[in-house]
Length: 125
Image 1 (spheres, rainbow, N blue to C red):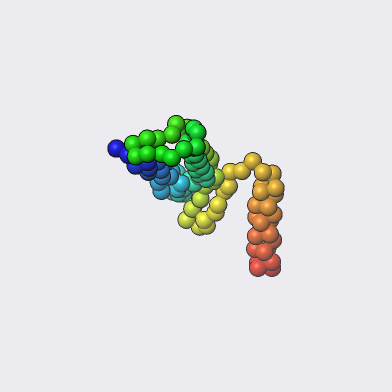
Image 2 (image 1 turned 90 degrees about the vertical axis):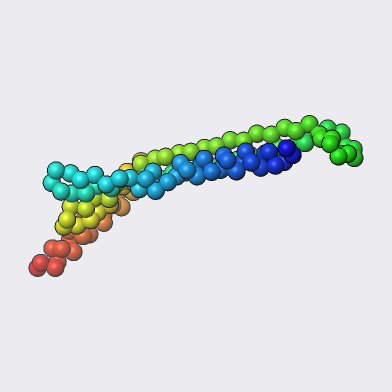
């Protein structure tokens, strides 16, 4: 088998296997129903990176059929699966709870909840 076809085949299989990691049940988890009837759906953030490269080395000369230069190559893959939050539906309202390390994100969410409470008070007044 031709070396290029062999490498292409390996690359294609690797890409297929990496893609299979990111199915819908990984990104959006299976819903969990609590005793009170609320439904909680977890979701994740997935980062997938794949890098490969190589080169042929040797003296510069005309390559005849059947000859090849020494080849060097490498590949690397990074998969990062991190919980991102939960979608909570209690039958009255649906809300998003994010899981984050950034304190500014938490502040923005709390400000949004505060504005929602204030607008409800204005509606009832």
